[in-house]
Amino acid sequence: NKTVQNRNSSSVKSGGEYVILTKQNELALQVSDGSVVLSAPNGSVSQRWRLKKIAGGAYKILSCATGEAIDIMYGALDSGVWVHVWED
Image (cartoon, rainbow, N blue to C red; front, side, top):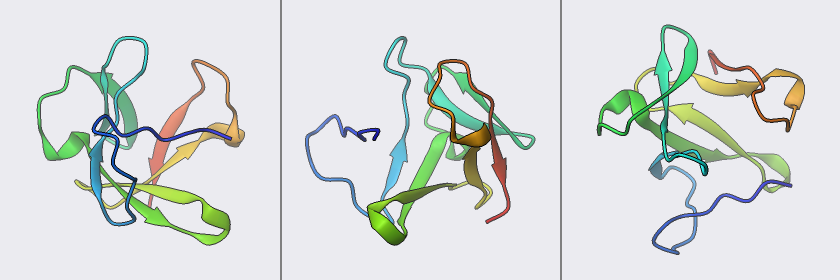
């Protein structure tokens, strides 16, 4: 299982908006033309994500800019895995 950690130690809330940063270099996940890219945090809507609770205690991660959901290719947990967005 992966842990979602909030910097200010409050709990993650379904419907809450978040900027998701990489642990290694604190780059932000950003939606760009159907892909997810890493870039310096800039406060744009394309870097904000909404969490939506689904069955089994899991969450969907939805782009605040497009409403599309993050998809991790084959559910892989490996570093460098392909991540893209799809229409929810």
